[in-house]
Image (cartoon, rainbow, N blue to C red; front, side, top):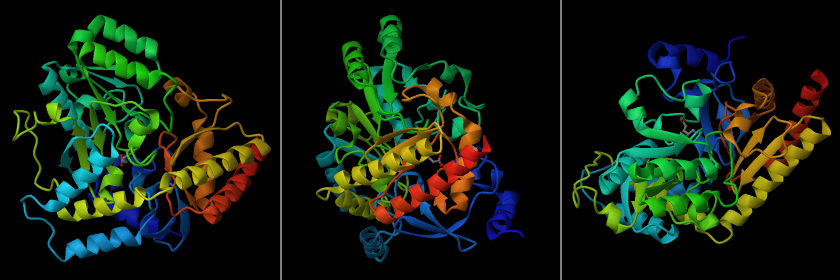
Length: 431
Ligand code: HOZ
């Protein structure tokens, strides 16, 4: 029998390339037909066939307070009646910027944009304009959106689709992007020793979240900070995922490292499309109209998205928010690890507060890109589909982080672990 999702996907394929508007949704990494979801509530999603799922995708990160959070909904509804946008400043932009600056240790001035990709792309231009240098450094398997300079040895969908460096990225531009292994301080030190005076910026996800979830090794972020300072390069933290998810002050507060620029997205829009760049006035004031580095956007600072983002940051600022998020994530990850072990399935699990990653590997700990690539992807595919059949929605790729929200309570976590135990038992019996 054809499911509603299959019918909807067949229709989508006629008018959308690959049937989707963002590649990771297409199930290319796991096979089968993507589910079409019709509604979400708290930790749950419902698909077009009326099946319910405990959701660990969370709209790829923004839904930190669950789906249809009443506080965020009320803020959007209130703004909806006042207008969607005026192409002019609104005090909501200032308010959200003030909240970001108050929360993030390195925040001083903020430029709102409409997506994480736009924020990262603009931060690179700003760093190049600020330093007068052209070379940028990124880490293999890290993903900073799909701007040309950053789509080089990238993670996330680029990795899932097998095009970490995409056709269409001019060679001349790719040649200006140097990649280094994440968590490899020696490689970065050597690079700075040879090319240090050319490097405009180093961009890094402080917790890599686009090759599953890899926390920084002890001393790694410290070394990145020291090298960039020593050589006059701009250190850009891509906190699109980690910003307000791993700590109320982002990864920079959690690890005590202050970047020069921070790129934000996801949670700061509360579920609506928002991105932002923040940093000290000495750099940020180089942006037009204050400075010469051009950057602009019709819908930048959209009042609706600002209202939604303000409400989201109000929620994550509540006392104990992250402690509880961490507790639930630990409960989930410990439960998954135990369930796998009980069925003889080798599994490593990484987690940092509200984000996590699972690795089907014999290795005890996964800290490097090469280890991620060596994991058993066929086992992940089986696990993914069996979990979906059990009513648990994980990201359809082994290269994505999982996200827990404040709406995930013990009931959902325990149900997930019980489902995983059944799935691991099946996988164990197959061997
Ligand atoms: N950064 C997200 C995935 N890791 C974006 C989702 C997408 O590419 O659609």
